Every structure is written in structure tokens, then in C-alpha cells.
Amino acid sequence: MKLTAAVVVVVVGLVGPARADDKANPTGTWKWTVTNGDQKRDMTLKLKLDGDKLTGAVIGRNNRETKIEDGTFKDGEVTFKVTRERNGQKSTSKYNGKVSGDMIKGKIESERDGKAESRDWEAKRE
Image (cartoon, rainbow, N blue to C red):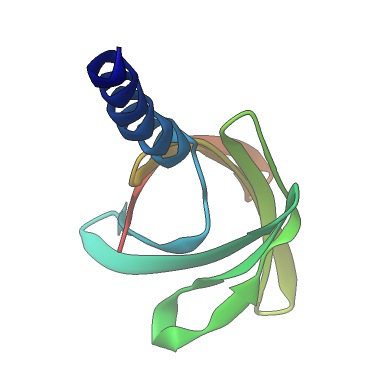
């Protein structure tokens, strides 16, 4: 009887932490590469989750930080917007993605020259 109880305690002890680690969490530093024509740029995203509110910044060219807007995290999904200004023109990109372990996979939707664009993005936790 004591041996059975000890085995149950050990098994429950091993299963409990595994479930806690399996829960998706977007907090951290994420990296991916953007290809535009024949040019490649490394991108960095820093995220912090506080409850269901997601804050952070995208770090792009010349280590320029752009804060994310309207960040949320629900059911393993991140969503946020990034607004950039270039030559007096503002453009907003909407990001969404599913967190799975140390990866985020999703879509970036934006508008350029009046045309809607959508592309895949895949970031890896650093």
C-alpha cells in the first residue's frame, strides 16, 4: 500500500510540471527574418504578458524600437498592431500568431500603396 501511494505521488509530481510547461506563454524575445526582394533583415520582437494584456516592441532597422499597440493574448494566440511612419506616411501592420513552445506562426496584414498585403511570419524565441 505504501509503495502504491509513493508511485502515485511520483507520477503526479512528474505529470503536473509537464502540464504547466505546456501552457503557451508569449513573454520573451522573438526573432525572425524578413525578405524584401533580394534584401534580408533580421527582426526582433520583445513581448511581455500581464494577465491578458500584451505589451512590447518590434526592433527593426538601426535598432529602432516601435511599440506594439492593442496587444492581446488569448487561447494561445497573440494579436497586436505596429504603426510606423516613413516620409510622413503612417502604415499599420496587424500581427496574429499561434504560440507553440518556442515558436510563433501566423500572418502579418498591412497596406502598401493602397493595396492590402498578407504574409506569413514565423518567429523563434531567443
